[in-house]
Length: 372
Image (cartoon, rainbow, N blue to C red; front, side):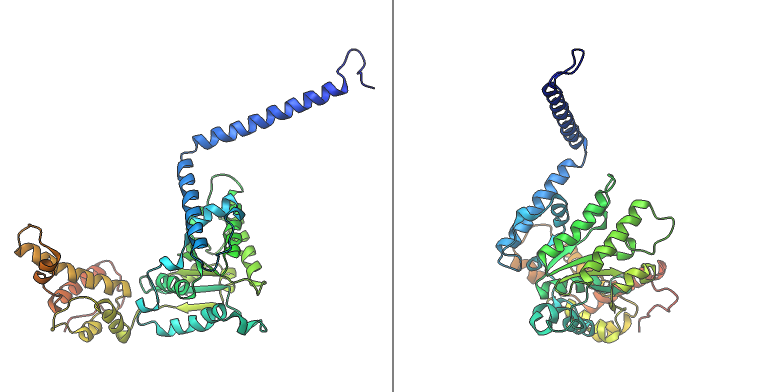
């Protein structure tokens, strides 16, 4: 029957009405979505981030590296957002040559991480000799944990996702879970790949009942997807974390990071190696006694030693400005006029840093180093 009783609509008219309502609803939905995107204050930043990510991926694709056959159209919008934190290993300035005093850690990383990635064919018949899917670097701040992570990616020529945890948090319900999933799906597409999380304890700290529902769900999903990597021996994706507070990490996270390396404060020999590396290409005077300085700087981290030498170098520039006019000179005259770094500069810098560390409690309960 094509007619509805008592002058009702025909079936074709009903279908037409339903089609019109569907069109109006769809137009209203997309219009509202467009209006919301225009009102979003971060909309322009998101567009720039997507453009940056595509340029970075295109650069990686054209460089002829590990992902030379990668199709940019394979990426979802969420993977593009994560790709903004992708670092080309060729752009990294840090290598093993820039790290001193940690040869034992470097050797272990070469054997447990680099070798299974570079010579994968040697370990195809063994489940035990696969690269670990989780690596934890822990120890006091300023001792080279982040440098080691970047150098590992540089030496193995793997893609490096320097994951900023704040990017996983979104105001819309469910978006954080999609971004978390995108981290792993992008890493699998780009493998071999390292997902690096600095200060991992701030993101994957021990769970408790006070955690927000969205945060708890994000942590659970992150660990679930991580388990997917662990159970797939053919997948070359490594989650690497760095922290100063390993005791705050969730025990389930520690279980997923079997390769754990403690990066301690450097001892006297390590400080000597670090100082030699820092001053290797710097103009220094004949009276500079690096072994004596290494002995006096007990309790100093690698970054502290770098800052000590930087301040000492500034003193010589300050003296030059005090003794010369402000008129510009060419580079050759400038370098001839500026004196080299002296032992007095280094000791002066050491005294200032020692007092600063003492007043801020960075020496803890240990006795601060004294000058001879």
